[in-house]
Amino acid sequence: MAADEQVTLLDTWASSIGMRVRIALAEKGVKYEFIEQDLWNKSGLLLQMNPVHKKIPVLVHNGKPVCESLVIAQYIDEVWKDKAPLLPSDPYQRAQSRFWADFVDKKIYEHVRTIMTTKVEDQEAAGKKDFIDTLKLMEGELGDKPYFGGETLGYVDVALLPYCCWFYTYENILNFSLEADCPKLNAYCKRCLQKESVSKSLEDPKKIYDFALKLRKKLGVE
Amino acid sequence: MASDQVTLLDLWASPFGMRVRLALAEKGVKYEYSEQDLMNKGALLLQMNPVHKKIPVLVHNGKPVCESLIIVQYIDEVWKDKAPFLPSDPYQRAQSRFWADFVDKKIYDFGRKIWMEKGEDQEAAKKGFIDSLKLLEGELGDKPYFGGETIGYVDIALVPFYTWFYAYETIGNFSIEAECPKLIGYCKRCLKKETVSKSLEDPKKVYDFVVMLRKKYGIE
Image 1 (cartoon, chains in turn purple, green):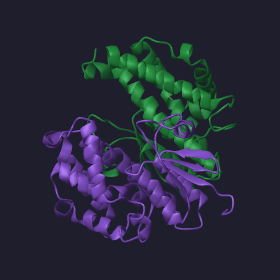
Image 2 (cartoon, helix red, strand yellow; image 1 turned 180 degrees about the vertical axis):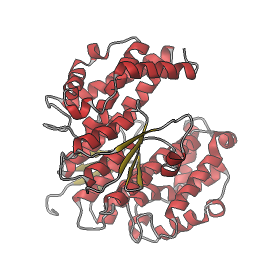
Image 3 (tube, helix red, strand yellow; image 1 turned 30 degrees about the horizontal axis):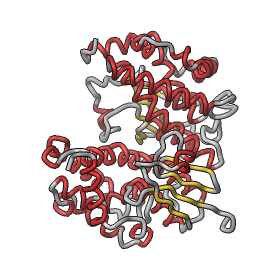
C-alpha cells in the first residue's frame, strides 16, 4: 500500500468538520497532503472533486474523491482496516455509534451554525439552553467510558472531538463555561487532547476564536 | 435466527419508514408492524427513541435502532447472507453512502418545502427538487438500479419518495415526469419488483394525507 498511495485532503484549517478527517487519518497513521482551500474563491480542484456540494472536506485517494466527513471517516476505517478500528465489529454497537455520530451532525452542528450566525444579544432566544442540554445528553452517552468508542477512540469521538477547540469560542459568544455546565465533557476534551492524533489534528482555540470573530464580522453579526 | 423478534414502529405514509420496510422485504425478514400516532406518541415509541421521539424505529430482540439509513445499514449487516445493499469495495461503498446522504439532504428537504410553502419559496423548492433529481439521473446513468444489477442502498433511500411525487406535483402544480423522465422510468421499473410494490404506499392515499396535514398546519 505505501509506495504508490496518494492521499490528499482538501480542507480549511479552522473547519471542525475537516478536523474529523484529520483525526481519522492520524489514528490510522496515514500520511497525507493537506491543501488549504479558499471557500470564498473556490479552486478548480475543489469544484472538480466535489461538484455536487462544492464543500470541504474532500479526501482524494489515488485521484478518486470521497466527500462528506462521516462518509470519509467510514471509508478511512474500511481502507486502513488493520489499525485502530473506528467502528465496533458488532452490528448493534455499530448502529449505536452511527446514531450518536449522526446526532452530533443533526444537533450539535446545527446549534453551532446558529451560534455563529447570531448576534451575542440574541443567543439566549436562539437556543443557548438547548445547546447546553444537547451537550449534557452527549455527557450522558459518554458515561464513565474514557472515549465514546469505549477504551479506544472511535467513530463518535471523531465526529465530536473537533468541537473541543471551538468550545472556547462558543463559551465567549454564549457567555457560559463548559467546565461549570458540562464538567464531564470538559474533562473528556482535556483527556483526548493528550493524545497526539487529536492534539495535532485540532487547532489552537485562541486562533479559532480570532478566526470566528473575523467571520462573524463578515457575516454582520459581530 | 428463527427465534428473532423484529418489530417496526412506523407511520404508514412515512418515506423513511418505507425505506425500512423495503430493506426488510429485500432480506425476507418477517416482522411485526406497529403503526404509531405521532400526534399522541405512545410509551413504547418514547422508550425506544427517547432522543428524537421519531419513527421509524426497528426493535430487534428488544433492542432499538433509530434513524432510517442507520437501520438499513444494520439490516444489511445482520442479515448479511442475502441481497447485500452495499457493495464490497470501500470506494463504491463510500459512493453509495454519499448518494443516500444526498437524498436525505436534498430530496426530503425540498419536497417538504414544496408542500409546506407558497409563492417564491415554493418555486425555489421546486427548482431545487428538480435539479437534485437530475443529478440523481446522472448518477443512475444506464444502470437498472443505483445499486447496479440489483437494488441497493441508494435505491432503498430514494424509491420511497416516489410515493410522495404525486402530492408534490399536485400541490406544486408541475410535472416531475416532464422534467425527469429517466428517474420516473426508474421508479416505475422498481415498482415492478414485489419487495418494492408491497413496501410502498399508494400515492393517491399519500396525497390525501398531505392535504390533511396542510389543513392541520393552516397552509391552505
